[in-house]
Every structure is written in structure tokens, then in C-alpha cells.
Amino acid sequence: MRFADKLSPTGLVLLAVLLWSTGGIFIKLTDLNAFAVNAGRSFLAALVVAVFTYKKGLKLEKFTILTSLLYAGTLSCFVYATKTTYAANAIFLQYTAPVYILLLSPFILKEKFKAVDLITVVLCLIGMSLFFFENQPETSTAPNVFLGNLVGLLSGLFFGLYFIFLRHPKSLKNPNTAISVFYGNLLVVLMMMPFIVQDLPKPDLKDILAIFFLGVFQIGLAYIFFTEGIARGVRSLDASIIGFVEPLLNPVWVFIFLGEVPSKWALVGGLVIIATVAFHTIAISRQVASTSDKMVPKTE
Image (tube, rainbow, N blue to C red):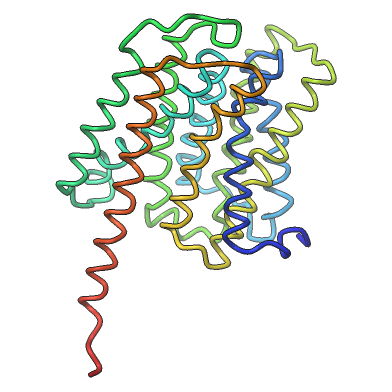
């Protein structure tokens, strides 16, 4: 992709994150229901990912089915939560994924549970509870806040499990890192079909343009940009820190274009979650770097 060649590796990652952050506004802008949005977005995203990664192989294996299901669950729950509750709630609650990663990794990947992990889990749980601290008013853009918040939590669970199993040795063997993204999006389309048939959508031009942007840019090309940036040398820590731009900007776009304002408690809870996860990411990275330095033999 010639456009990508002109950007620095960090620029590619930042562009991907900026595109991801537009999910809330474009999901809210279309009048189509969550099932139609989910299916249309994922169909286009699957096409884009296939076009750019098919040379690495698209062979479906048993373990890929598991990761694809988890990815499909993440996408589906996020779209439904965004349509049902405030956009800020949906994205902040999805970013509770590290809580499940820290709690479940010791059992699935046999990783050690550290003291800093416990602090992170406790603080994130406090942040999560603040979303349910008060009854947020239901609006035209957030018709069922409580249900949407619950589905947002489920999105975080799927997201956390998805990352855990991506790090599993069986996933790392696959040469195509986008394999679960491709099949996950196809699964979303299949899963949404029964709901769409019951209530056939009648999209107008605005709906079509919103779905096109979500599928092609917000998921498809964004993933390509992100993986290209990582492949060209962006450190995992740097990518993770840049990634925190997404949950911060997502509700900003919705506020600017739709005037949607979440409750103060939800904003406080979201900031607690994001700040805690960012601190944990940096702290763990420093521990790993310190350990690596001690293991390097001195040449003096």
C-alpha cells in the first residue's frame, strides 16, 4: 500500500487507533439496528482483511475457530452496547479486558499473578462499579443504558479472552496473524443473519456510507495499518500507550457530532479504568526491561 509506505511506523499505529476511535460515532449515526450494522461492517471488514492478507494463508484450523468466535463476540457485543448505552460506557467497559486477562492468564497460559496485577484488578473493578452507581437517563442514542452496560462488560470479557488465546502457542504458529480477524468477521455475518431476516433493513445513503466507513476503514484498513506499524518496529509498549487514544477520543467524537454526554460517574469510572490499565502496562514493561538488563552479561 503506497499510502502506508509514506507514514512512519508510529504514524501507522496512531492512524489505526484514530480510525478505531470513530467506531462510536459511525455506529450511532446510522439508523440501522445493531444486527444490521454488525453484519454490514463485518462483511466489508472481512473482504478488506482477505485482500491484504490472503497471501499469508487463510487455512481454517480448530484453534482458529475458538479465537474467531471470541473476536466475533467482541465485535457483536461492542456494536450492541454502543447502540444501546452511551458510547463512552461501551468503549470504557470494553477496556476492562485486562481484568479478565490478569485473572484468567494464570489458569490458561500458566502466567504468574503479581501484586501489581491485584491492584490493577481491584481498581478496575471499582471503576466498573461506578457505571452502575447511578441511574443514567435513557435517551434516543442510549435507549437502554443498564442493558447496554452489561453487554459492554461482556464485550470486555470476550476481548480479554481473545487476547489470551492469541498469545497461546497454537495461535502463534499461524503465519497469518489476521486469520481470526477474517473468520471472526465472517462469523459475525452468519450470526446476524437470523436477526436481519426477521427485520429486513432499509438503509438510506447515510446508513450505507456509515457501514462502508466502519467496515473498510474503522476495522479493515485500521487493522492493516496497525499490524504494519508493529511489523516495521513499533514496540508493544508504545503501541499499547498509543492505543489508549481510542477510548479517550471515542466519546469525544460522539459528543461533538451528536451531543451525547455520559454521566459524571461513568466518566470517572472510565478514567479510573484507563489510567489503571495504562499504569499497569508501563509498570510491567519496566519490570521486563529491568529483568532483561540484569540478564545481559557485562563486557567491561
